[in-house]
Image: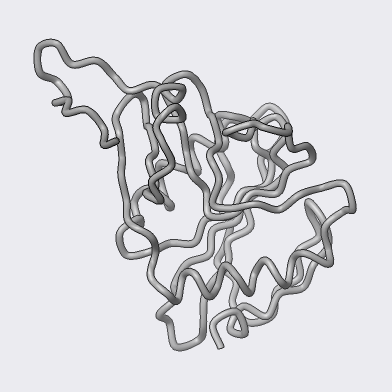
Amino acid sequence: MTAPARHYGHPGYEPYTADEVLGWPEDGIRHEVFDGGLHVSPHANLDHQMLLERLRTALHPALPDDWAMLGPINLRMGADTLLVPDLVVLSRVARGAVAADPADTRLVVEVVSPGSRRMDRLIKPALYAEAGITHFWLIDDLDAATGPSLRVFRLPPGATAYPFAAAQTGTVTVTEPFPVTLDLAGLLR
C-alpha cells in the first residue's frame, strides 16, 4: 500500500498522523511525519550503512546489560510526529510495540547523508530536544579526508534545545550515557 495522495495546503488536506503511518504495511521505505507532513526517503548509501554497522559493534560491549540498541526504528514523538533515527539506545523495549517512546530513549544517533543534511542537522535535533531526549550524537563528514566527525550533545535539565557541541575527529572518548571510546576513522575502514 502506498501513501494516499494528499497535497499540503490544498482544500481538504488532512495532516498525516503517527498512528496512521504506523498502521501502514511494512514496505522497507523510511516514512517520517513532521508536524503532519510526510517525509519519505530511500535507504542510505553504503558508507552510511557500513558506519552504522561498525558503530553498533563498537557500542554493544559498552551498553548496560538491560539496555537495547536498535535502528533504524520508529520513534513516536507525538500524535503528528514520527521519526526514524539511525540508531537508538533504549532502557526499555515494550514487546510487540511498533514504535519506541522518547521517555525510554537514552541516546539517539543520526548519521548525516547527502539527502538528509537539513533534517539531521536542524530539524531532528530540535525535535529530540523538545521531547527531552538527553543524549544525541550527530555523525557527519563521512567523505572528509580525516574521517567522520562526531558531535556529542547533552540536554541540560529543563532545557528545550541542545547547546553547541564542537565536532570531534579521530579517537573520541564519550562518558555519557555510557563510557565508550570510538575510533571514528575506523568506522569507515
